[in-house]
Length: 442
Image (cartoon, rainbow, N blue to C red; front, top):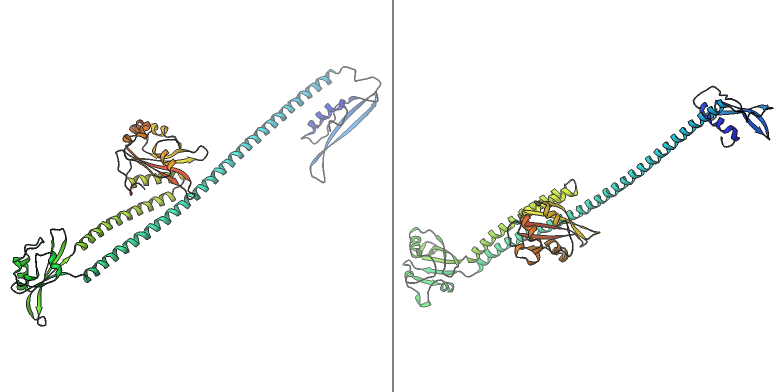
């Protein structure tokens, strides 16, 4: 509105509008000389606040009062008081404009801060989304591990069934196989024998009716004749185990030879059962049980590791649990987990146990051209084992770091996702040289 009036009235109108704000009574300032077509007139402005009935908001009514033409040109007369008032009002206007400009700047800065905060929130949201995706990936990997554990469990169950069937087959085989049997008279003379007895005794077909004491045998059983006499006396079977000079095991059973409807004792029957296979089977069963117990222990440890990783509150805790479980499983002294930076294609340590700052700085970044164990495993995408770093020529640049860290052997295993992509590296270190076997190198 101030731009619509004459220039002589702009300052008065501007000051009047500021003065009327917040008051209810009308405001009438002094008359101001204004020229209309070259004739001087005295014009005053009267402002009054009124309530708008439609919008219920206060409006300002400005009335222009024309006092008529004046003979003298009051615009040329000095008005010291008027000049002082105008200067005062203009100063106040300038201060108000400065305050408005300051408020505008503050508003702009506040908007910039809000925009920056919004961008940070968006960035955090992206990070949360990325973390959620990583957790989903970890969940899928854990599900895959569970499926593999179920497969291993099924294989172990099948192995147990195979061992059980082997025992059954062995028992049936023993029952169906010809057994070395020697029949003696009550005077302990040879009555008859099966061909398999020739594998134990130095006996020929012409040796019938010879005393048993005259024959030599390959068994570590000097009390054979005495036990035969004891059976004739007590009429109770005797069972012994003996070994041959060729290392075979025999179960020797001495029983009374009954005839005449089992009422008359007519000598002794001796059976020599080759239990070498059974002895070996029993040893194999014990060994298998030990292996199964070890496998079960591994499964339990893997299951515990899976639960700890799955219930970890964040990725860092999950990696720490994973590293601790692998170190316990491998009986390692030191360990680290590296993740692959997709942009730089460099492995970076994200979890470690037992290392000092010098090692962490030396292996802060590992690339494809690195000859450390993790660099080699990164190129080959298969586990790399160094039984003794001091004898490995390619590990020579890292011997000083290895000596400070206190390890002699190292194993690095690449971490491959379901898309067959390298995602990281798991390395375990041992303070002493170590020979890696198929079990402890996986």
